[in-house]
Length: 189
Length: 215
Image (cartoon, rainbow over all chains, first blue to last red; front, side, top):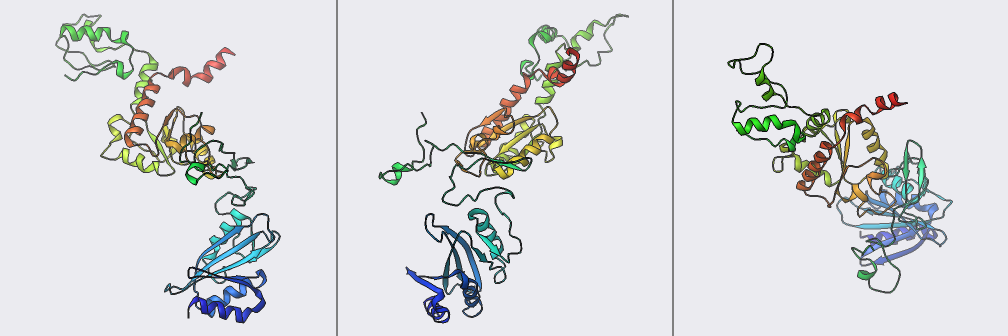
């Protein structure tokens, strides 16, 4: 069974819960509603043989509603097929944890929680993994500036703003080509 | 006879006038030291005053003697945080051999270290740990910011990285490079030795005592 067949099987089983499918250069993606996300993942693992969770990622569609999107990359241990499962998440919604299916989801979901601020239910140890406990922001959100924001936790940690204007590796708006908009080095005068 | 340059050891030139005279006249046995040594027993000594002892005494300042001892046995605290640490390790190994200059005793306990080499990217999460290790080092202590990241944040202009360790602890020597060559680190440590040689060591050490006296 290829992943294209699996998508048809999932469509047949979950019906309206499947909000869309995408095929791009042989990569199969299925979009499902959040309420049936955990069932779809469990079915993919137990019935369709996707026994390996490669990665859990999240997207921030800033300005859209629902704002966030979860992305699960599934594969089989013999690498014979690959399936991507996506699900939209609103800002006030929580995602059911996949740690009961794949233990490896633990740290991935902690990273999503830390960087994007998406909550999970039934996660065994949902705390920040890269930034420190008490850091007030979620840095990978679109409305968070790359330069950072100042924060202060006495005796624990602090953060400041990095000077970005005019520096290297900083994109300037405009229609010039990328090499001009994002120079490796920029004259500092 | 090995000839040491007294200037390079940090002794003021006036202190060794007798010694230089001795060298010019060819007197003495060729062994010399900055501190009193046993005199030649075969010489005819005056009952009250041994004139030969002059040749075995060097007059100097306490500052110069203290600095001379400090700068020739700098014990680094290797704060290795990123790729610069690899170059730091290389500079301590046989090819570059930091020990030629008296700085090879890497101490992984801050309580035994003299100079902290901050080599690598200091993230905000690590920043207070670096500061804490620095606070645990006994005075006198010095700090070297090795490489672009430790000096200024380097290419990491982002929310996660401290933009230069000098925002937290005082830095004596900055070393440029990404990462710097081991030779650059050795040059930086030798620059630090030059700086240590010029410090008012005694005044710094007794600073609080002098302040108490004057108040």
